[in-house]
Picture 1 (cartoon, helix red, strand yellow):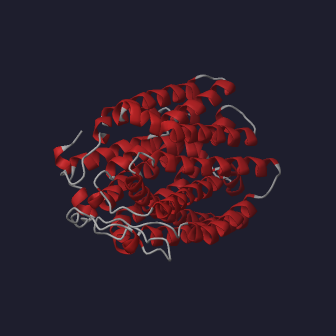
Picture 2 (cartoon, one colour):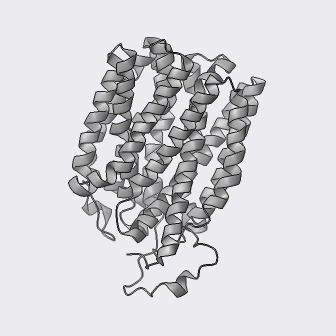
Picture 3 (cartoon, helix red, strand yellow):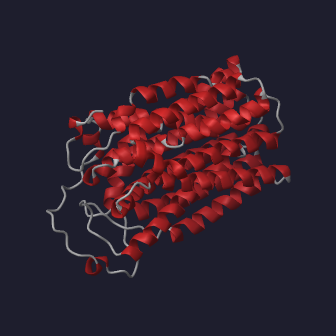
Length: 420
């Protein structure tokens, strides 16, 4: 158990963690909500768009392996602060490249967006796990609900701005500048952990050491590097679990709006609105998910959710009706809501080993963002975007097969004793 912290310090850390998750979701959805307009501005085919989106995944995959060890050295607060500036700057670069019609500039901006987003993701999830342990109850999925609230807000704002004919360049540039300026202030109250690593700095001006009682137990072992975690069967299986749900979630982020426009002939604002429906359902699933997890357990809950996601995907792809497709997007979002946060919580079950394991799981999970955009884009070019989305079903079946790996692991137990 972590050294107890004063209740006001923990409350401030909870609020700061929500800021990190919500801002991350808002910034990313601001970009995702305007993908159709960027595509049109650059005159990209479906296949070419998939390859352009690959730049985001490339940046994330490059950042993730280094994120865990770096967080163990500089803390999650400094990591999130730095990466929010990188991501905000990336949106400005994308806006400038889109305005100039310069595809290489947009690709560079998207690479930086992925770099910032990936390392920010690991930092805020490590902090979320620290806060969860200080609270002594399951709250990780509610932090991810904060992310989803941010994505809904970003998508709805995108819908409104599309309706008002606000240029995509102005939209992304303003969001980028606000992100870079506001997030470093919002995450100042992150807290540390007594696992041997400085995972985050206490709230400035609070003497946590004086306010908290001394730990009665022996110090926890020093955190290991991420390379050791790559050899743990349970950690790798959790990574595959997260990969499957990340593919289902990320594919919707990139392609739901495009599929409504190209596959169903819907208006641009209707495509963005359907994307917002998906995100709203995901938000609700993440907010109410902790009650289900506490009552029914991780494995039973996530298996039911995966089936719901499969049903929603089937409606979206096969119904042939736009209203049913919107209903399918709702079920798709609801069913995938808990996958990513649950995988992160499972990876962080042991406080001493959380940074390395979260980094590994996130690295494997982000392979979905590396492979997903070009795969869906190329399949969509050949067979149509709706048929291409059926690939998501294969990954959701994989999630069902490895879902036993997310069973809770007692702290300080070797991971190879609990492979599922």
